[in-house]
Image: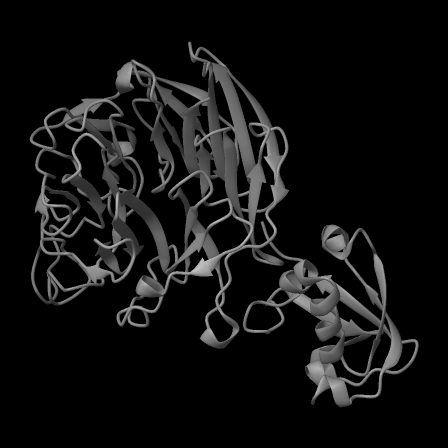
Length: 99
Length: 370
């Protein structure tokens, strides 16, 4: 889906604590986007360091990063083509793992 | 006048900095910087005002390069980190080496999957070096246990040596373009052909400015009893070249094992080198008794340095970048273990003390007098 062709909706992005510094100190970002892919496109444009922390250089979402639209993981919707509606909340959540 | 000895200690849980006087009686520790995130490589850059660099290898949020301009009191991310071009298809998995280039600001970075990046501006921007990163062999290299890593970058004027595991030794005599595999005499234990053109699991390469044609290599040894295709191949683990890395010969005779990771040359004597042999199956201290082995004749013979080490029950590993030597008149060696101990070997490794005994697993240790 071409992000430019999606109908833009006003949505909120929740940024996890370790990435606030890459989002200019913000914990929430307001963007206009019609899909998750368009959200990432907008993040890449406005906060390239934040985008690099979410996606690798091929554009794929990093293995340990989960993107939720409201309560739904993107894999249970349409992946990066998941459409967004006004008021949706997109959460960027790192997986809980390690040792 | 440089009067402090500075250590960077890259660990599984971040970067530590230790600082001591030139007496090296004791060191004060600070950190961790980039807490909780593995640090596989560091550079204490003494060109001009000293700067410290370290890789922060975050499996969640990707790779970063950290820089300090206050001798390791604070660190900040550089403006960008190495990244493959979008159309390349590869994605950065780790940063294994950071090395100084020309002038005061040029840097090189060796990464996983094995590729080389260059920064002209002290780490703020990076471009891939095509001569090796897109070498015709590059898509045929295979990862070793630690990943497909470019871990060694050695420069000698326009000559550049690279160590890749598992790729082997590559040499450019023209500033990085082109590179050629240069592994004549470098054995591989996991290949039916004992001496392939490339694909060796090189662990470390070291050179000395006073002997520019000479190089030493710690290769993946431990194949003396191999009974598979191609037969046994003893003593392929510790090697020497006297022709700028074009050909290599074994200097492993006399060591308890030709398997190991780090190799360090005495800062004032290219004939003196140090290795830390490991038991091949466990990759820990042979006989559970740690020892650094020193040659003072370029690998012709070896002596065992053990004063201060436990005599038994030690099962640590020292990784490829985790041993260094300072450049004071009577240099000290330093190594860090996978069990989180940092050891100092004063008087050129004659006597050993444990400086810190409970750090996280240590990946890399670098030292400089600043």
